[in-house]
Image 1: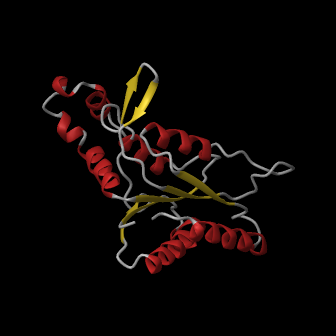
Image 2: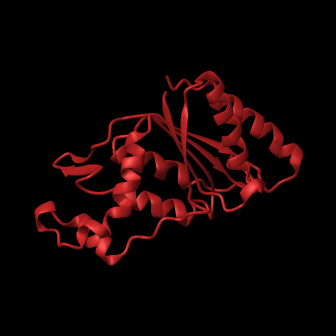
Amino acid sequence: MRTLLHVSASPRGEASHSRRVAAGVIAHWRARHPGLLVSARDLALHPVPHPSEDFVQASLAASEARTPNAGSALESSEMLISELERADALLISTPMHNFAIPSVLKAWIDHIVRPGRTFRSTARGKQGLLGNRPVRIILACGGALEAGGGHQEDWASPYLRYLFGVIGLTDLDVLVLENCNRISPMISPSISELARQLRELSWT
C-alpha cells in the first residue's frame, strides 16, 4: 500500500470517536508502511457542494451531447473521482446520523458515483469502472445495534456496501463502533476491539 485516502465526516472535531480510532489506525499503518502517503479529505471542515441541476444534467448526458458549461459543472466530481483513483486504499471514518450517513458524506458519494465515469449500465445491471482496492469504514453510532431492547437499526452499512460495489469496490469492511453516547466503560472496549480488527487487516 502506497497511498491511503482518508475521508472523514464527523462534525465533532477532537471529540469524535470515529476520528480518534482512525488516527490510531493510520498511525499503526504508517509504522508498518514507512512510505505510506495519506491524503485527507475532511468533509466536515470542507464540505463538497451538493449536486446542482447543472451537475445532474451534465452527468446524465452523453459526452458528445454535453453543453459548454458541463466541464465546470463536473469539475468537483472529476477532482474527487481522480483523488479516489490515485489511492491504493480508502478509509472512511463517519458517525451514523439518524441510522444512516451524514449529508456531507452523501454529497461526496453523489459526486463519485457517476454514470459513464465510475459505473455503466448494462443488460445485466450496473458494472463498476474503478479498479478494486480495499475500502475500510469506521462507523460510530450512539447506541447498540444488537437485537434486544433499546437497539437501533443500521441502514448505513448495507447501503455503503452496495454503492461501492456499484463502482467496482468490493473489497470492503464496515467496522462498527457502538455505544458512543453511553457511559465510558461501555465505549472503551468497543474502541479497543475495533482498533484491533483494523490493525489486523492486510492491505498489502
